[in-house]
Length: 460
Image 1 (cartoon, one colour):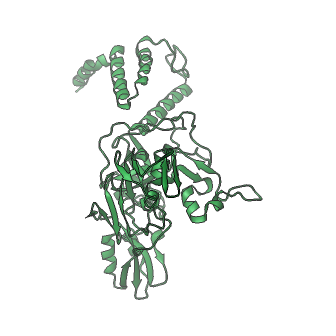
Image 2 (image 1 turned 90 degrees about the vertical axis):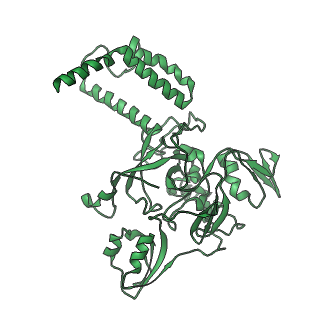
Image 3 (image 1 turned 90 degrees about the horizontal axis):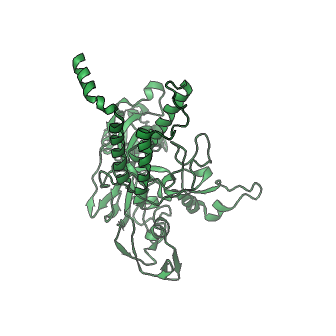
Protein backbone atom coordinates (compact mmCIF):
# COMPACT_ATOMS: atom_id res chain seq x y z
CA UNK A 1 0.00 0.00 0.00
CA UNK A 2 2.82 2.40 0.90
CA UNK A 3 4.49 1.65 -2.43
CA UNK A 4 1.26 2.47 -4.30
CA UNK A 5 0.84 5.76 -2.42
CA UNK A 6 4.47 6.66 -3.07
CA UNK A 7 4.03 5.89 -6.77
CA UNK A 8 0.88 8.07 -6.98
CA UNK A 9 2.69 10.87 -5.15
CA UNK A 10 5.58 10.64 -7.58
CA UNK A 11 3.28 10.67 -10.61
CA UNK A 12 1.45 13.74 -9.30
CA UNK A 13 4.60 15.62 -8.31
CA UNK A 14 4.50 17.54 -11.60
CA UNK A 15 1.45 19.43 -10.21
CA UNK A 16 3.81 21.29 -7.88
CA UNK A 17 5.51 22.85 -10.89
CA UNK A 18 4.66 26.57 -11.05
CA UNK A 19 4.04 26.47 -14.79
CA UNK A 20 1.58 23.59 -14.43
CA UNK A 21 -0.20 25.45 -11.62
CA UNK A 22 -0.36 28.57 -13.78
CA UNK A 23 -1.68 26.58 -16.77
CA UNK A 24 -4.51 25.07 -14.71
CA UNK A 25 -5.39 28.40 -13.07
CA UNK A 26 -5.42 30.38 -16.33
CA UNK A 27 -7.50 27.71 -18.12
CA UNK A 28 -10.14 27.72 -15.35
CA UNK A 29 -10.13 31.53 -15.29
CA UNK A 30 -10.60 31.86 -19.06
CA UNK A 31 -13.47 29.33 -19.02
CA UNK A 32 -15.11 31.38 -16.23
CA UNK A 33 -14.67 34.61 -18.28
CA UNK A 34 -16.33 32.94 -21.30
CA UNK A 35 -19.23 31.79 -19.06
CA UNK A 36 -19.66 35.28 -17.60
CA UNK A 37 -19.39 36.78 -21.08
CA UNK A 38 -17.45 39.86 -19.98
CA UNK A 39 -14.14 39.82 -21.84
CA UNK A 40 -12.87 42.89 -20.00
CA UNK A 41 -12.15 40.38 -17.23
CA UNK A 42 -9.30 39.01 -19.39
CA UNK A 43 -7.26 41.90 -17.98
CA UNK A 44 -7.08 39.72 -14.87
CA UNK A 45 -4.80 37.24 -16.71
CA UNK A 46 -1.59 39.24 -15.96
CA UNK A 47 -2.48 39.10 -12.25
CA UNK A 48 -2.72 35.30 -12.39
CA UNK A 49 0.59 35.20 -14.29
CA UNK A 50 2.27 37.33 -11.63
CA UNK A 51 0.79 35.27 -8.78
CA UNK A 52 2.24 32.04 -10.16
CA UNK A 53 5.30 32.99 -12.26
CA UNK A 54 6.88 36.43 -11.82
CA UNK A 55 5.67 37.25 -8.27
CA UNK A 56 6.62 40.91 -8.62
CA UNK A 57 3.55 42.36 -6.85
CA UNK A 58 2.81 41.69 -3.20
CA UNK A 59 -0.89 40.84 -3.67
CA UNK A 60 -1.36 39.42 -0.16
CA UNK A 61 -0.45 42.77 1.41
CA UNK A 62 -1.56 41.62 4.89
CA UNK A 63 1.28 39.07 4.95
CA UNK A 64 4.93 39.81 5.63
CA UNK A 65 7.16 39.35 2.58
CA UNK A 66 9.85 36.65 2.49
CA UNK A 67 8.78 35.09 5.80
CA UNK A 68 8.37 31.32 5.85
CA UNK A 69 6.34 31.19 9.04
CA UNK A 70 3.62 33.85 9.32
CA UNK A 71 2.30 34.96 12.75
CA UNK A 72 -0.82 33.10 13.91
CA UNK A 73 -2.98 36.22 13.57
CA UNK A 74 -1.88 36.69 9.95
CA UNK A 75 -2.61 33.03 9.23
CA UNK A 76 -6.14 33.45 10.62
CA UNK A 77 -6.69 36.62 8.58
CA UNK A 78 -5.40 34.84 5.46
CA UNK A 79 -7.76 31.89 6.04
CA UNK A 80 -10.70 34.22 6.74
CA UNK A 81 -10.15 36.26 3.57
CA UNK A 82 -9.90 33.09 1.48
CA UNK A 83 -13.07 31.66 3.09
CA UNK A 84 -15.08 34.85 2.51
CA UNK A 85 -13.96 35.16 -1.13
CA UNK A 86 -14.57 31.47 -1.88
CA UNK A 87 -17.97 31.41 -0.13
CA UNK A 88 -19.07 34.62 -1.86
CA UNK A 89 -18.06 33.20 -5.25
CA UNK A 90 -19.95 29.94 -4.58
CA UNK A 91 -23.00 31.83 -3.25
CA UNK A 92 -23.05 34.15 -6.26
CA UNK A 93 -22.62 31.57 -9.02
CA UNK A 94 -23.55 28.12 -7.75
CA UNK A 95 -25.53 27.57 -4.55
CA UNK A 96 -27.03 29.59 -1.69
CA UNK A 97 -28.64 28.70 1.63
CA UNK A 98 -32.28 29.67 2.18
CA UNK A 99 -34.75 29.33 5.08
CA UNK A 100 -38.52 28.75 4.87
CA UNK A 101 -40.05 31.57 6.98
CA UNK A 102 -43.80 31.13 6.28
CA UNK A 103 -46.37 28.38 5.78
CA UNK A 104 -47.14 29.24 2.13
CA UNK A 105 -45.51 26.04 0.79
CA UNK A 106 -46.67 23.63 3.48
CA UNK A 107 -46.63 20.64 3.41
CA UNK A 108 -44.18 20.44 0.54
CA UNK A 109 -41.84 22.66 2.53
CA UNK A 110 -42.23 23.44 6.23
CA UNK A 111 -41.43 26.47 8.35
CA UNK A 112 -37.94 25.80 9.67
CA UNK A 113 -36.67 23.94 6.59
CA UNK A 114 -33.15 24.99 5.61
CA UNK A 115 -32.54 24.63 1.88
CA UNK A 116 -29.82 24.82 -0.68
CA UNK A 117 -30.91 26.78 -3.75
CA UNK A 118 -29.12 26.06 -7.01
CA UNK A 119 -28.15 29.21 -8.92
CA UNK A 120 -26.66 27.10 -11.73
CA UNK A 121 -29.98 25.37 -12.52
CA UNK A 122 -31.46 28.36 -14.36
CA UNK A 123 -28.20 30.28 -14.69
CA UNK A 124 -26.83 32.68 -12.05
CA UNK A 125 -27.59 36.39 -12.31
CA UNK A 126 -24.76 38.91 -12.33
CA UNK A 127 -25.54 41.08 -9.26
CA UNK A 128 -27.18 44.46 -9.94
CA UNK A 129 -25.38 45.92 -6.91
CA UNK A 130 -21.95 44.25 -6.67
CA UNK A 131 -20.74 46.43 -3.77
CA UNK A 132 -22.30 44.78 -0.73
CA UNK A 133 -21.47 43.39 2.70
CA UNK A 134 -20.69 39.62 2.51
CA UNK A 135 -23.56 37.22 3.33
CA UNK A 136 -26.05 40.02 4.11
CA UNK A 137 -29.07 40.43 1.84
CA UNK A 138 -30.41 43.99 2.04
CA UNK A 139 -29.80 45.02 5.67
CA UNK A 140 -26.65 44.87 7.79
CA UNK A 141 -26.66 42.28 10.60
CA UNK A 142 -27.85 43.57 14.02
CA UNK A 143 -29.53 46.58 12.39
CA UNK A 144 -33.07 47.17 11.15
CA UNK A 145 -32.53 49.93 8.64
CA UNK A 146 -28.88 50.19 7.54
CA UNK A 147 -28.41 49.10 3.92
CA UNK A 148 -25.93 46.28 3.36
CA UNK A 149 -25.09 47.49 -0.15
CA UNK A 150 -23.86 50.56 -2.02
CA UNK A 151 -25.39 51.77 -5.28
CA UNK A 152 -22.27 53.50 -6.57
CA UNK A 153 -22.04 50.77 -9.22
CA UNK A 154 -25.19 49.42 -10.86
CA UNK A 155 -25.02 46.64 -13.43
CA UNK A 156 -27.85 45.83 -15.86
CA UNK A 157 -29.63 42.48 -15.84
CA UNK A 158 -27.53 39.63 -17.22
CA UNK A 159 -28.04 35.90 -16.66
CA UNK A 160 -25.37 33.33 -17.39
CA UNK A 161 -26.05 30.02 -19.12
CA UNK A 162 -27.82 27.53 -16.87
CA UNK A 163 -28.39 23.79 -16.79
CA UNK A 164 -32.10 24.01 -17.67
CA UNK A 165 -35.11 26.24 -18.21
CA UNK A 166 -37.86 26.76 -15.62
CA UNK A 167 -40.52 24.09 -16.05
CA UNK A 168 -44.12 23.95 -14.89
CA UNK A 169 -44.33 22.96 -11.20
CA UNK A 170 -40.64 23.64 -10.40
CA UNK A 171 -40.11 25.05 -6.90
CA UNK A 172 -38.41 28.39 -7.47
CA UNK A 173 -36.77 31.08 -5.33
CA UNK A 174 -37.16 34.62 -6.64
CA UNK A 175 -36.96 38.27 -5.61
CA UNK A 176 -40.36 39.59 -4.51
CA UNK A 177 -41.62 41.64 -7.50
CA UNK A 178 -43.54 44.20 -5.40
CA UNK A 179 -40.57 44.48 -3.04
CA UNK A 180 -39.07 47.35 -4.99
CA UNK A 181 -40.62 49.73 -2.45
CA UNK A 182 -41.14 48.92 1.26
CA UNK A 183 -41.75 50.76 4.53
CA UNK A 184 -39.09 50.07 7.14
CA UNK A 185 -41.53 49.38 9.98
CA UNK A 186 -43.57 46.95 7.86
CA UNK A 187 -41.07 45.25 5.57
CA UNK A 188 -42.94 41.93 5.42
CA UNK A 189 -45.46 43.51 3.01
CA UNK A 190 -44.92 45.87 0.09
CA UNK A 191 -45.57 49.59 0.02
CA UNK A 192 -48.24 48.97 -2.63
CA UNK A 193 -50.09 46.52 -0.39
CA UNK A 194 -50.13 49.09 2.43
CA UNK A 195 -51.46 51.73 0.02
CA UNK A 196 -54.25 49.38 -1.13
CA UNK A 197 -55.16 48.59 2.48
CA UNK A 198 -54.91 52.06 4.07
CA UNK A 199 -54.76 54.57 1.21
CA UNK A 200 -51.73 56.46 -0.09
CA UNK A 201 -52.24 59.44 2.19
CA UNK A 202 -52.26 57.27 5.32
CA UNK A 203 -48.93 55.73 4.31
CA UNK A 204 -47.12 58.86 3.10
CA UNK A 205 -48.36 61.56 5.53
CA UNK A 206 -45.96 62.21 8.45
CA UNK A 207 -47.18 62.39 12.04
CA UNK A 208 -47.68 66.14 12.72
CA UNK A 209 -46.05 65.85 16.16
CA UNK A 210 -43.08 63.54 15.51
CA UNK A 211 -42.57 64.03 11.78
CA UNK A 212 -42.33 60.25 11.35
CA UNK A 213 -44.17 58.31 8.69
CA UNK A 214 -46.80 55.86 10.07
CA UNK A 215 -45.03 52.77 8.69
CA UNK A 216 -41.50 54.15 8.72
CA UNK A 217 -39.25 55.51 6.00
CA UNK A 218 -40.14 54.43 2.46
CA UNK A 219 -37.20 52.55 0.92
CA UNK A 220 -36.59 51.68 -2.74
CA UNK A 221 -34.54 48.52 -3.42
CA UNK A 222 -32.80 47.20 -6.56
CA UNK A 223 -33.97 43.85 -7.93
CA UNK A 224 -31.27 41.68 -6.32
CA UNK A 225 -31.88 43.20 -2.86
CA UNK A 226 -35.62 42.54 -2.68
CA UNK A 227 -36.96 39.89 -0.31
CA UNK A 228 -36.48 36.27 -1.39
CA UNK A 229 -39.72 34.29 -1.86
CA UNK A 230 -40.19 30.60 -2.64
CA UNK A 231 -43.22 29.24 -4.54
CA UNK A 232 -44.18 26.67 -7.13
CA UNK A 233 -44.08 27.90 -10.74
CA UNK A 234 -47.52 26.85 -11.99
CA UNK A 235 -47.36 28.68 -15.34
CA UNK A 236 -44.48 29.59 -17.65
CA UNK A 237 -44.27 32.18 -20.49
CA UNK A 238 -46.98 31.67 -23.11
CA UNK A 239 -49.26 29.62 -20.83
CA UNK A 240 -52.90 30.48 -20.20
CA UNK A 241 -54.03 30.12 -16.59
CA UNK A 242 -57.44 29.83 -14.99
CA UNK A 243 -58.56 28.89 -11.47
CA UNK A 244 -62.04 27.41 -11.02
CA UNK A 245 -63.22 26.53 -7.49
CA UNK A 246 -59.59 26.39 -6.36
CA UNK A 247 -58.50 24.03 -9.17
CA UNK A 248 -55.76 25.43 -11.41
CA UNK A 249 -56.03 24.88 -15.17
CA UNK A 250 -53.03 25.47 -17.45
CA UNK A 251 -53.83 25.72 -21.17
CA UNK A 252 -57.21 24.13 -20.41
CA UNK A 253 -55.75 21.10 -18.58
CA UNK A 254 -56.10 20.47 -14.84
CA UNK A 255 -52.92 21.02 -12.87
CA UNK A 256 -51.54 17.91 -11.22
CA UNK A 257 -52.76 17.44 -7.63
CA UNK A 258 -49.68 17.15 -5.43
CA UNK A 259 -49.79 14.95 -2.35
CA UNK A 260 -48.72 17.85 -0.14
CA UNK A 261 -51.05 20.51 -1.59
CA UNK A 262 -53.38 22.04 1.00
CA UNK A 263 -56.69 23.92 1.11
CA UNK A 264 -58.53 25.39 4.07
CA UNK A 265 -61.46 23.37 5.42
CA UNK A 266 -64.17 23.95 8.02
CA UNK A 267 -64.37 20.94 10.34
CA UNK A 268 -67.47 20.43 12.51
CA UNK A 269 -67.63 17.87 15.34
CA UNK A 270 -70.41 16.47 17.55
CA UNK A 271 -69.50 19.03 20.19
CA UNK A 272 -66.33 17.40 21.48
CA UNK A 273 -62.84 18.74 20.78
CA UNK A 274 -60.40 17.24 18.31
CA UNK A 275 -57.45 15.77 20.17
CA UNK A 276 -54.44 18.10 19.57
CA UNK A 277 -52.10 15.08 19.63
CA UNK A 278 -53.96 13.60 16.67
CA UNK A 279 -53.42 16.84 14.73
CA UNK A 280 -49.74 16.78 15.71
CA UNK A 281 -49.40 13.25 14.34
CA UNK A 282 -50.81 14.53 11.04
CA UNK A 283 -48.17 17.29 11.08
CA UNK A 284 -50.85 20.00 11.30
CA UNK A 285 -49.32 23.03 13.00
CA UNK A 286 -51.22 24.41 15.99
CA UNK A 287 -50.65 27.92 14.57
CA UNK A 288 -52.69 26.98 11.50
CA UNK A 289 -55.73 25.71 13.40
CA UNK A 290 -58.44 28.27 14.17
CA UNK A 291 -61.16 27.28 16.64
CA UNK A 292 -64.52 29.09 16.31
CA UNK A 293 -66.05 27.06 19.16
CA UNK A 294 -65.65 23.66 20.80
CA UNK A 295 -67.10 22.00 17.73
CA UNK A 296 -66.07 24.09 14.70
CA UNK A 297 -62.52 24.53 13.37
CA UNK A 298 -60.75 25.95 10.36
CA UNK A 299 -57.52 24.26 9.26
CA UNK A 300 -55.44 23.60 6.13
CA UNK A 301 -55.53 19.95 5.04
CA UNK A 302 -53.80 17.83 2.43
CA UNK A 303 -55.94 15.27 0.62
CA UNK A 304 -54.54 12.44 2.76
CA UNK A 305 -55.16 14.38 5.99
CA UNK A 306 -58.67 15.16 4.80
CA UNK A 307 -59.42 11.44 4.48
CA UNK A 308 -57.95 10.73 7.91
CA UNK A 309 -59.91 13.45 9.71
CA UNK A 310 -63.12 12.38 7.98
CA UNK A 311 -62.66 9.01 9.67
CA UNK A 312 -62.60 10.53 13.20
CA UNK A 313 -65.70 9.37 15.08
CA UNK A 314 -66.51 12.84 16.44
CA UNK A 315 -66.21 14.63 13.07
CA UNK A 316 -69.65 15.21 11.52
CA UNK A 317 -68.99 17.46 8.55
CA UNK A 318 -66.07 18.90 6.56
CA UNK A 319 -66.50 21.72 4.05
CA UNK A 320 -63.81 23.25 1.89
CA UNK A 321 -63.48 27.03 2.20
CA UNK A 322 -64.09 28.88 -1.03
CA UNK A 323 -64.49 32.45 -2.19
CA UNK A 324 -67.51 32.37 -4.55
CA UNK A 325 -67.28 33.23 -8.25
CA UNK A 326 -67.75 36.92 -9.00
CA UNK A 327 -66.65 38.22 -5.59
CA UNK A 328 -64.34 41.20 -6.21
CA UNK A 329 -61.31 41.37 -3.90
CA UNK A 330 -59.16 44.53 -4.06
CA UNK A 331 -56.17 42.57 -2.72
CA UNK A 332 -56.23 40.32 -5.80
CA UNK A 333 -54.26 41.11 -8.97
CA UNK A 334 -54.80 43.16 -11.10
CA UNK A 335 -56.53 45.27 -8.40
CA UNK A 336 -59.21 46.57 -10.74
CA UNK A 337 -63.01 46.32 -10.30
CA UNK A 338 -63.20 45.34 -13.97
CA UNK A 339 -61.90 41.90 -12.89
CA UNK A 340 -64.10 40.11 -10.35
CA UNK A 341 -61.39 37.62 -9.43
CA UNK A 342 -60.42 36.05 -6.11
CA UNK A 343 -58.07 33.35 -4.78
CA UNK A 344 -60.40 30.48 -5.74
CA UNK A 345 -61.86 31.79 -8.99
CA UNK A 346 -59.35 33.64 -11.14
CA UNK A 347 -58.67 34.36 -14.79
CA UNK A 348 -58.40 33.46 -17.61
CA UNK A 349 -54.98 35.07 -17.80
CA UNK A 350 -52.21 34.81 -20.41
CA UNK A 351 -48.61 34.75 -19.13
CA UNK A 352 -46.45 37.21 -21.15
CA UNK A 353 -43.61 35.81 -23.23
CA UNK A 354 -40.48 37.57 -24.50
CA UNK A 355 -41.00 38.83 -28.06
CA UNK A 356 -44.78 38.32 -27.98
CA UNK A 357 -47.10 41.27 -28.62
CA UNK A 358 -50.31 41.95 -26.69
CA UNK A 359 -53.17 44.26 -27.66
CA UNK A 360 -53.65 47.06 -25.12
CA UNK A 361 -56.96 48.54 -24.05
CA UNK A 362 -58.00 50.66 -21.11
CA UNK A 363 -59.76 47.56 -19.71
CA UNK A 364 -56.77 45.15 -19.87
CA UNK A 365 -54.06 47.73 -19.09
CA UNK A 366 -54.15 46.97 -15.31
CA UNK A 367 -52.82 43.48 -16.15
CA UNK A 368 -49.79 44.78 -18.06
CA UNK A 369 -49.30 48.22 -16.46
CA UNK A 370 -46.62 47.19 -13.97
CA UNK A 371 -44.74 45.17 -16.61
CA UNK A 372 -44.59 48.11 -19.02
CA UNK A 373 -43.87 50.83 -16.48
CA UNK A 374 -41.81 49.16 -13.73
CA UNK A 375 -40.27 45.88 -14.90
CA UNK A 376 -39.37 47.01 -18.43
CA UNK A 377 -38.68 50.67 -17.67
CA UNK A 378 -41.01 52.52 -20.03
CA UNK A 379 -42.79 55.83 -19.51
CA UNK A 380 -46.47 54.84 -19.45
CA UNK A 381 -49.22 57.48 -19.45
CA UNK A 382 -52.99 57.39 -19.87
CA UNK A 383 -54.85 60.39 -21.27
CA UNK A 384 -58.58 59.78 -21.46
CA UNK A 385 -58.99 56.55 -23.41
CA UNK A 386 -55.57 56.80 -25.03
CA UNK A 387 -52.42 54.91 -23.96
CA UNK A 388 -48.99 56.48 -24.44
CA UNK A 389 -45.69 54.57 -24.09
CA UNK A 390 -42.54 56.70 -24.18
CA UNK A 391 -44.59 59.59 -25.58
CA UNK A 392 -46.17 57.63 -28.46
CA UNK A 393 -49.82 56.63 -28.62
CA UNK A 394 -50.17 52.85 -28.98
CA UNK A 395 -52.65 49.99 -28.79
CA UNK A 396 -50.11 47.16 -28.43
CA UNK A 397 -46.93 46.23 -26.58
CA UNK A 398 -44.10 43.76 -27.30
CA UNK A 399 -42.60 42.19 -24.16
CA UNK A 400 -38.84 42.32 -23.53
CA UNK A 401 -38.75 39.66 -20.78
CA UNK A 402 -40.30 36.31 -19.97
CA UNK A 403 -42.75 36.15 -17.04
CA UNK A 404 -43.84 33.41 -14.63
CA UNK A 405 -46.81 32.71 -12.36
CA UNK A 406 -45.94 31.51 -8.85
CA UNK A 407 -48.30 29.96 -6.28
CA UNK A 408 -47.87 28.37 -2.87
CA UNK A 409 -48.93 24.78 -2.24
CA UNK A 410 -50.83 25.97 0.85
CA UNK A 411 -53.40 27.51 -1.45
CA UNK A 412 -55.48 29.49 1.05
CA UNK A 413 -52.52 30.70 3.12
CA UNK A 414 -50.12 31.92 0.46
CA UNK A 415 -49.45 35.49 -0.67
CA UNK A 416 -48.45 34.72 -4.24
CA UNK A 417 -48.99 35.80 -7.86
CA UNK A 418 -52.74 35.94 -7.27
CA UNK A 419 -52.02 38.98 -5.09
CA UNK A 420 -49.15 40.74 -6.89
CA UNK A 421 -49.02 39.32 -10.40
CA UNK A 422 -46.22 38.18 -12.67
CA UNK A 423 -42.61 37.36 -11.75
CA UNK A 424 -40.15 38.74 -14.35
CA UNK A 425 -37.25 36.55 -15.47
CA UNK A 426 -34.72 39.00 -13.99
CA UNK A 427 -36.19 38.31 -10.51
CA UNK A 428 -35.51 34.56 -10.66
CA UNK A 429 -32.83 33.51 -8.13
CA UNK A 430 -32.64 29.72 -8.46
CA UNK A 431 -34.19 26.32 -7.96
CA UNK A 432 -34.79 24.76 -4.53
CA UNK A 433 -32.98 21.43 -4.64
CA UNK A 434 -32.02 20.11 -1.19
CA UNK A 435 -33.13 20.24 2.47
CA UNK A 436 -30.11 19.94 4.76
CA UNK A 437 -31.79 20.76 8.08
CA UNK A 438 -35.34 21.11 9.41
CA UNK A 439 -36.32 22.52 12.81
CA UNK A 440 -39.77 22.61 14.42
CA UNK A 441 -40.18 25.97 16.18
CA UNK A 442 -42.83 24.51 18.52
CA UNK A 443 -40.30 22.11 20.06
CA UNK A 444 -36.99 22.57 21.85
CA UNK A 445 -33.44 21.22 21.69
CA UNK A 446 -32.97 17.86 19.93
CA UNK A 447 -36.71 17.16 19.80
CA UNK A 448 -37.07 20.15 17.41
CA UNK A 449 -35.03 18.42 14.70
CA UNK A 450 -37.19 16.79 12.03
CA UNK A 451 -34.79 13.95 11.29
CA UNK A 452 -36.96 12.49 8.52
CA UNK A 453 -36.66 15.69 6.47
CA UNK A 454 -32.88 16.11 6.68
CA UNK A 455 -30.61 15.55 3.65
CA UNK A 456 -33.54 15.15 1.24
CA UNK A 457 -33.73 16.26 -2.36
CA UNK A 458 -36.77 18.37 -3.20
CA UNK A 459 -38.92 16.77 -5.88
CA UNK A 460 -41.56 18.47 -7.99
